[in-house]
Amino acid sequence: MTAVWFCRGCPEHLRGPLAEAGLTAVGPELDARPSAVAVMAGGEPYTAEVLDTLPELQVLARVGIGYDAVDLTAATERKVMVTNTPEGPTTSTAEHTIALMMAVSHELTASANRLRAATGDYVNRQNSMELNGRTLGLLGYGRIGQAVAGMARAIGMEVVVSDPVHDNSVSFEELLERSDVLSLHVPATPETTGIIDATALANMRRGSVLINCARGPVVVTDDLVAALESGHLMGAGLDVTDPEPLDPDHPLLHMDNVVVTPHIASNTGAGRARMERMAFEQVRMALTGYEPTHLLNPLVLGAR
Image (cartoon, rainbow, N blue to C red; front, side, top):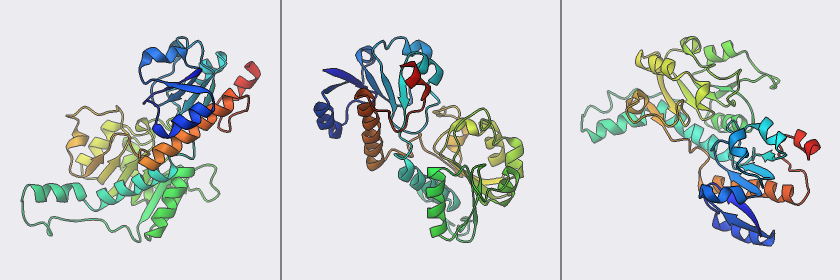
């Protein structure tokens, strides 16, 4: 039997397909990983040093989209195919984005905290933003961004997009100026890391909302805290942060106008199962001599 290592343990719905493919599940214990020919990976790092401890590895399948924790060059040099599941988390992450936007714009945390503390005067202290007729700005317009746009239009929002591959893209500067809600949907790259800094935040509309379900390093955390404390931003909804996770005493976790979730936007039952099935299909293709449909390092084919 050939071993596939699962970062979170093998889900029940994959045990049948594994057996049919002549494969066996190991993990999540790390001491089982060196024997694996395939890895169903989460967000754990796969540096050159880690890859050197996995001599049998043929395919590393990310159960999700992001692969910034994987050294693609090192994997290619070691003839390891790396794949992801770009369609898998789309619906769940888009819905989570809308949920954060609703929670922040309607001041759900502050309102619930006032009720819990029995402060009274609930109506006069509430100053929510009605989203119908407001402008949602999307930085990045891939699968998730497009799904968010459809949901936002359904509740009456205007949508503007800044993405170089989108036909009707506006500039980054115009996006900041026009958005009542700015939602981030870009990967963490040298170009996007820190793009939402003090200057960008200052150029956002006063009283606007920032949503980040992309990657934490896209936002300069200290600058965001300052923009929230000054009152320039109405609030923020964050599924990702930098650092991640935040220290329990971090100010973002103690602001009534901020909702922080622990990088779980795609982690609905349906979304998780969909990503697991897609990742396993990439493993199956790779181990049976087919080119995976979501191969991230195609140069490895020549190396192999």
